[in-house]
Image (tube, rainbow, N blue to C red; front, side, top):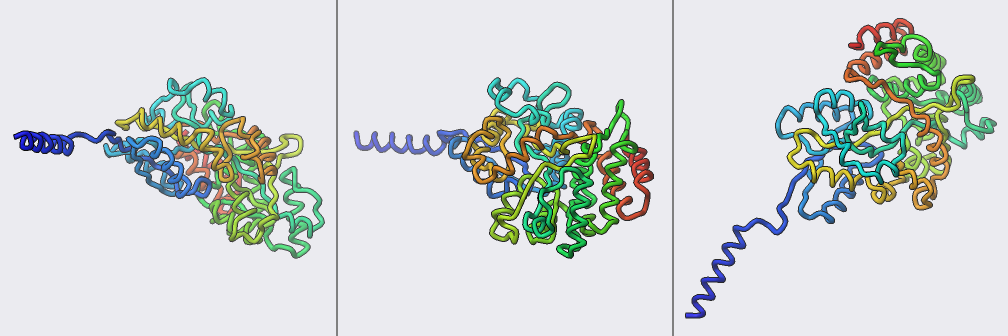
Length: 412
């Protein structure tokens, strides 16, 4: 009888256990990232694995798209109902995302330690109109990379400090027969070209907008495009630059086919220490140059943040994940790929060792980051400017005409 009762109780217990919820009520987050070379897909997966091991009740589904598809994928998912919980966003999107209720205002979630510990410039990545729409994650600007060996062969003692000096040094390298086209840029009809253009606008002291209206068709904005066109027409710039994105620039540079290249932080360690690089150990880096009488250095704010979408059903878990991904511990572990957002990291030998030259350039470049225009109509403005740059490079319009047309088509 007792045996029979115990069997019955055991059976009941097994049925109850089978039908009961798991010890951990698992939450699934959907996160959207871009396929990129700074934090690669494998790196993001490794960071995420560390999070899910520490938080076994949270599962994270990762999706990767090219940068060019990141904005539209985020916006379209909002209307589909399925959507994402966590999204990577560019510094140029918070104005639009705030206006269209895409991201959650997380100002109340940001702690005093975060406010004090993160570099002041990094907050501009996620802030709009006095509110924070996420945490900065990738802190980046474009730098001037140079091939030390080629400069030495050309008898050039130091890298250029002004854009005019860059032209002069490139001409010396070309005239000595060391390289036919010494400079590589990412000037494809894409956001990459706007980042190069913005770097030059910052050097020439230009403005994108004045009183909410386009102001780039004159002054420093016009000077910046004129410089691009002159460099292209001079034969000093690789003619394929008009079709290059950043990875094309990296490949050309690390194959030894460029003496100078403008690119993001990630190129330093990939070109200087990568197994497939022909210029390993020969890569120099300095802040992007300035313009005599106007600027010492130039830089574009190319940073990105992680935010929670307004359609997320799990904002608390999403924030927990973002805090992990942007933490100083995580960022320091991957500092050879992207420099940390945390100010004290720059005094940590584990972060700086082996990339002292990169850190020195970053201290100047990150402090000079110039923003692309803050407007909810950024996408229209960027598209108009991309077209203007192409028209001017291909001699389909003068820089003046191209920028005037861009201003008219900017939606502002």
